[in-house]
Image (cartoon, rainbow, N blue to C red; front, top):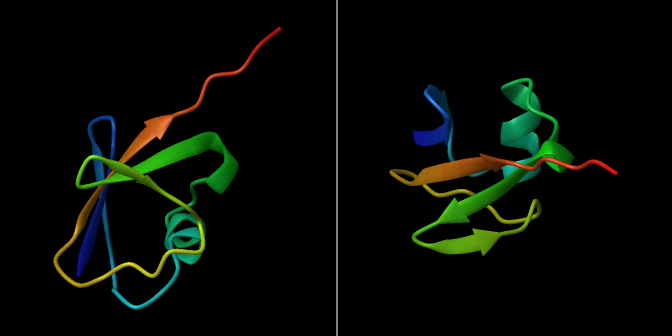
Length: 63
C-alpha cells in the first residue's frame, strides 16, 4: 500500500498506479496539490511504489 498525506488526512491506495490515478481515486484534484516523495517533487505520471509515503502540499493561487 501507498500512503498519501494531505494536511491531517491520510489516504491509502494500492501501488503500481500513477500518482494522478491515485489522487483521483481519493477525490483530490491533481492540479490542486504538489506531491513530495523523499524530499523531492514528483509528477503526476510517476508510478507509486509499495510502502511509499507521499506528502501532498495544497497549492494556493490567487490574483
